[in-house]
Length: 428
Image (cartoon, rainbow, N blue to C red; front, top):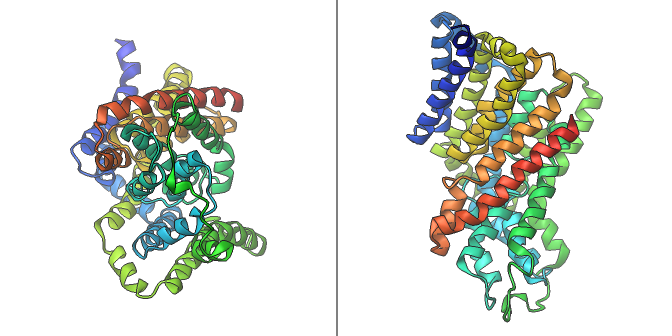
């Protein structure tokens, strides 16, 4: 009987995550599903309605929530502007003449588009893969996996991804400190992509590639800089503004520098493309934009409800905290990533639990290792997910049967997770 009583906290939190996954599976949306999880959590821990509303209100009004909402909003506006004004295409066109190697051309455009955190962005680079493979013996399935995999190689190392920004905020780190721990994921992804999809014994690439003829670069480096200025401003500005602001105002949150950099990048895109203001107004009322901002709010509500209900402390006492931590950092993020196919979903649901358990178990100095394990596990789940929107869109574009392509990405995804576990022990 005592055994089942001890397991009760774990069963409660598992049921909460099941409710979230059911909501995601029923296409209620990630934000509403996480909010449902918060309500179920409050109910199971006998948290009164007034305490729930008070805690949720404080979470919504918290400066972290507001700052992160602004960052995600600006990222969505910037990526939407670059996509709809055609500037993203012009960036790629200006770079095309510099790429002579056919394998490099195949991976370059999905990787470049991967710098823009837009949902379903793989469909944007699919036509370029088609062109780059012209005249070469590259099957539709190979085009699918190359486009899909290399579209996501930057996800664990790029400061513009909302999932990374959210993870850093939940761990109380600056985005660059956070990336300082997770960036090997990008190295692993590129190496796995080469080994499983690109090496000559796997992809012979026989034939004549007309797309790889020695065409001179169009416009030279001047055009590359001109068209790429919004991205350069966003990334470079984040470093510069964060450094300047932290020097002048030591107590200011690091998010302020990122917000200024993103705002400057949006202004660059606005000045470079006439009629852009109309596009911005349209983006601000789009369902996708509003859902993304709402998701951020729901994540912080869930985080604060989880902290206030006392369940984290109960879980930390279960088996000395180790069993609960392993489940929270490996199984939960992988499962949510696999079901949802969205980084924000597993970060928002699993990271608050991991952080809470680490602190409750008195292992705060090990937080970087545990949060990195959580990110690797969740990302492996996302890449292995047949529900990932980029995977579905790419299969549809190249008219490839979903299961045959999925078999090729499942194995490197599992290897990525194992590499994450090995890296976790190195960090420990």
